[in-house]
Length: 111
Image (cartoon, rainbow, N blue to C red; front, side):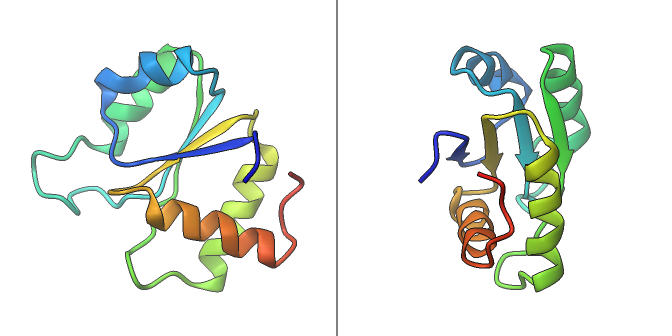
């Protein structure tokens, strides 16, 4: 694993300050809006909190079990351009971790 990336389960706007305190500079959200129902915070809500806290934010939803090569390449482009370290999240963190690992295996990351 790299010091440039971390993984988490679902976060909400109320968690963004903790993300900043842990030293992250960017967030990538891989969880589709409404995947967890109406109680799941929307990407727009999290993005507003992240940007207000000075973080870069990317919403790249990936459907669980349906990750494509395009998803991996799109992620790699975002990751390579974002300030590090980057916090990636989805429902449990596994999907985000898989996305990162596939991009590493394909030698797409400047990490």
